[in-house]
Amino acid sequence: MTLLVLAGTSDARQLLEGLQGADVIASLAGVTRSPADLPVTTRKGGFGGVVGFRDYLVENGIKGVVDATHPFASKMTQTAAIVCAELGLPHIILQRPEWVASVGDDWHFVDSVAETATIIPVGSTVFLGTGRQTLAGFSCLEGRKLLARVIDPPQKPVLAEFQGDFLIGTPPFSIAEEVALFRDKGIEWLVVKNAGGQNSRSKLDAARELGLPVVMINRPKLPDAHVVGSVDAALKWVRAQAW
Ligand SMILES: NC(=O)c1ccc[n+]([C@@H]2O[C@H](COP(=O)([O-])OP(=O)(O)OC[C@H]3O[C@@H](n4cnc5c(N)ncnc54)[C@H](OP(=O)(O)O)[C@@H]3O)[C@@H](O)[C@H]2O)c1
Image 1 (cartoon, rainbow, N blue to C red):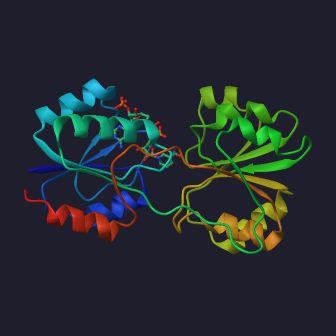
Image 2 (cartoon, protein in one colour; image 1 turned 180 degrees about the vertical axis):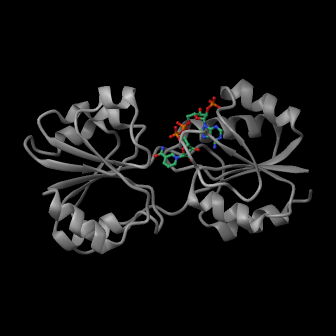
Image 3 (cartoon, rainbow, N blue to C red; image 1 turned 30 degrees about the vertical axis):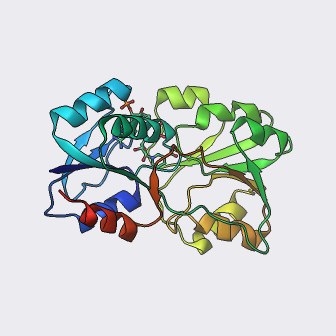
């Protein structure tokens, strides 16, 4: 049997480390320019929607799928759920728990990037920790000073679409580093996707320490599928399969 792991997250990497030696293929979308190698055979690039994904599974004898993509990678997650249900393939979504506000946090929840404009006052200096893909949508924040942190230096299309400055950096960052950054740049608001996990949580701890408000973008809705919340639970599921 061959298991397909839809990757692109630190959880996927950890899961694949636990599956070394098994018959596993990892898949990356190919959006990060130089991703660190994964410890199993890896394919890269989109499948070509529902039809392409179905063809890939059938042609490669895939017997099960773990969707360990990012909580905001909703297109891939919907495609995988639809096709696996259609083919009757064992399938789970590995999605870490959401971040939850605690005492001292000043979080404002929204369902879309566009809604951030209804909350963040004109004239504010705003840190965007939302990644490269959604940057064009922040044209809604006209009149605010925007600072976006991205992993890869942005290329021309993104530069043309986004009216703001860039910081290049790869997580994790310590709370002290985030506090120093927000102070140095005069940050007044943060915009964050509710990704969950420890790797990128320090910006929220830093915001709390500085008393900064955060606009938290809620996760997209999950398809009707079996969801597990930890790498250990995903490993357990894989080992329990009868292949
Ligand atoms: N969205 C985020 O904030 C975020 C943050 C960190 C990492 N990532 C990772 O970056 C990748 C792309 O994210 P996204 O938000 O653009 O996702 P998306 O909107 O769900 O996906 C866009 C398209 O990229 C392809 N794709 C996505 N994940 C893939 C994978 N693991 N293997 C092969 N093809 C994949 C699919 O193309 P086809 O339709 O042609 O098959 C999909 O329709 C994901 O793998 C995700 O885990 C995303």
